[in-house]
Amino acid sequence: MSGDASRPKEPEEGPPPLLGSWPAVYAALLIYLAAIVALLAWFTKALS
Amino acid sequence: MSSIDWVVVGASLLGIVLYGVWRGRGNADLGGYLLAGRTMRWPAITLSIMATQASAITFLSAPGQGFADGMRFLQFYLGLPIAVIILAATAVPIYHRLKVYTAYEYLERRFDSKTRTLAASLFLVQRGLAAGLTIYAPSLILSVLLGWNIYITNLLIGTLVVVYTASGGAKAVQYTQVMQMAIIFLGFGIALVLILNSLPPGVSFLDAALVAGKLGKLNAIDFSFDLQNRYTFWSGILGGTFLMLSYFGTDQSQVGRYLTGRSVTESRVGLLANGVVKIPMQFAILFLGAMVYVFYLFASPPVFFNPVEVDRVRSGVYGEEFRAVESRYEEVSAERNQRVREYVEARHAGDAAVVAEAERALQGSDADAKAVRTDAVAIIQKSDPDAQTSDTNYVFLSFVLGHMPVGVIGLVLAAIFAASMSSTSAELNALSSTTSVDFYKRFVPKARQGEGPTAARREVLVSKAATVFWGIFAIAFAEYASRLGSLIEAVNILGSLVYGTILGIFLVAFYLKRVGGTSVFAAALIAETAVVACFLYTDLSFLWYNAVGCLGVVGVSLLLPKSGMKTPEPAAA
Image 1 (cartoon, rainbow over the protein chains, first blue to last red):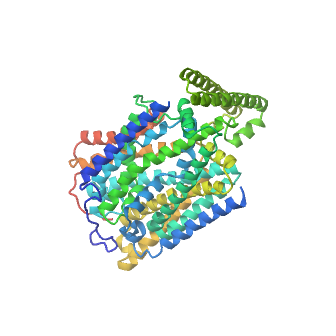
Image 2: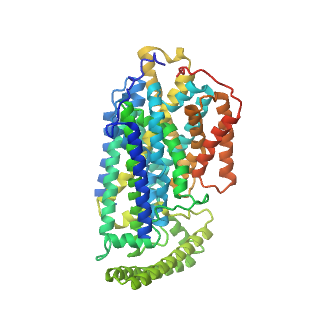
Image 3: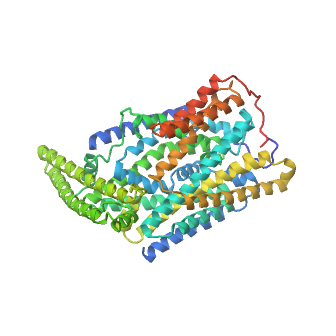
């Protein structure tokens, strides 16, 4: 497979553009999800 | 439709096709054709992933669900951020490192040819049929509401997509998806603003939201644990995570989108950004449906939104009975109109006791209206047992055609076409990739594939031919698609029948290094049988099929003898 001429150039891993490390990015997304759920729970309770 | 609307629709469709053909020119090899030469940046990847997932069915059916059932469908997407985190951390770097064209190539390296072929075959069957539904669903709705010929509409959407997808491959798909998402955001954004502006004078946005909430339309979160309840927090977080893991991690129509990233970082960020924007976007679409419901509280809604079924029952033996129900519905709607105005006035006056009384009266009159609507549906079904008794897919477009100004109607229709084309093009590109990489390159002898530039040209040609073949297959399936309930759910149920099993195979591949190819292959067959049995013989909500299939493969793989082990080696793709 590595000898296949039509294969695109191998991309390289790098740091995320924000927050310094990938685990920090993942944690931020989980916190965001928790905030969304909390907001939606409040939204449901407040308006229903 | 006015001539201005026709111009807006025509210009949008022509613009998409020409732009796709232009941006997709110059693909000399398979890497360029199937993966856009791996040159894409994360914003294009994010929009492409969103455009692939959000088909026309999403934009037609979801507002209808918001109208009929409130916002609880939103919970379906709660597992998405979790799934994209897991995939960004595990699958994305593996796929990039192995330089695969399709997700299924990886399975041969990890297991064997039969497991790769099984997963690729399940994908081709499921996605081939789903591509047909992606074309069929908006055609059906447009034909019912606008009187368009459904066969010609199917043919038009399918042919336009095939032209630029076969011509330009992944590059054409992704650049047109950016353009299509712009049309979709514009069309639906303007529709939301106009709905809020259509409310009677003195009724504010907050009034409208409170009315929707008091009538049970803003039920975005339900923490009850009920396996028969399709949309709860738990089914979304647990079942939804499995479904999204499978969809984004093993469905080539999505894997193919982020494999076009120029680096692991671009692919990861493109995928993770989808986890940020998807829930708010879906919230807006469902909220749109809830606001359409509020709009009709102040207007005279039809008792049933599918005009074909209404005309049929009116002209049948139950016509008289149905007309009586329609008259009753007009009366209860007028009564409800009065109650909602009283509720808004009471709220503005600020007396809590009066507000509570007005709220109870409003809820009572809304329940009366629902009861009459239920009677109308019962007559439709009595008149024709095969009649389509769900009208959720027709609500939003009926509203647009009846109450939106000239030009905006064309823009919303263009957005629906754009959504249909964006999903279909990604599906055809993925079907083409799997056919050419997992079958043509895998099973056709090397001698017949040729060498050097000849082989590269032939591979691109085979991929283009595969795109055309799957396009014709999808159009043919769309022409013969039978009646379905809620179309968006039909597609999700179809996906859930195989996604769990495919995901289980991939999870075993990623994390259970001691399980071999023969064990996982047998486990996949057993798990798929269990999923089909659940579908046929139980009331289990379809989101849980993903968990059954996935855990079935993982569990049975662990129980079976460790046979079929192989040392990882390059697949003969």
